[in-house]
Image 1 (tube, one colour):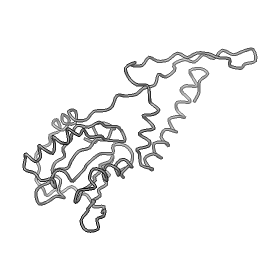
Image 2 (cartoon, helix red, strand yellow):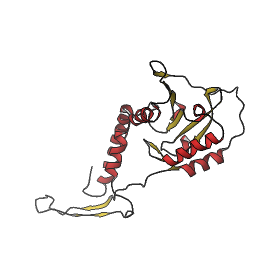
Image 3 (cartoon, one colour):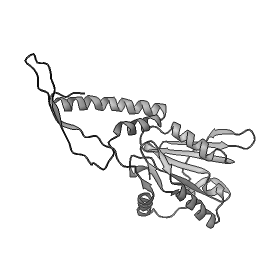
Image 4 (cartoon, one colour):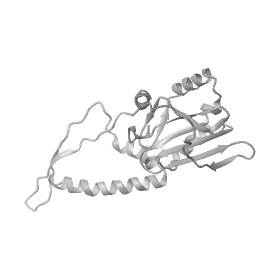
Length: 232
């Protein structure tokens, strides 16, 4: 699920009765995702809970382990992750936030409310002693396609040519630009989309993003310098 796109994806870990720390399945619900966030559909979550109860599973088996991916960036929780964990799972007797990042890096934290309450980072491993069936890669991809959607992409029309007439002293006095066509049905609001993602990133993730963007700006400056009088 992590490698289907560069967006995050989230779901619930399913455990066996009597062994709530052994996850044997991962189930998606309908959600809208981006590279820095996951938003579950409330109705789909309710349907998932109802289906699990119909299968005679207790909440400890299906509603306590929140799993999501960080296919880009670092494996530690973002500010949005922390807010979601506190708001959605804060009243549970116990809950786990598990993150699977790129390069198979993981983060796992147990939150419990019994006694004084608290948090505890816990180790994670694959238990190869447990039996398992054959791979169902096709079914996994179908589950992803049925449940995960992205918000409409927001685009900018980028200039292809820039003409800047000059006066006899070599000073620009005006001009016009020719733009690449863009889909008129899509909102042209890339700036606010980027700022939203930045605000929801963790500090280190934000630093890495800005460093990567700085490198790109150098490349783009060289590209647009060849188009005429435009440079970033």
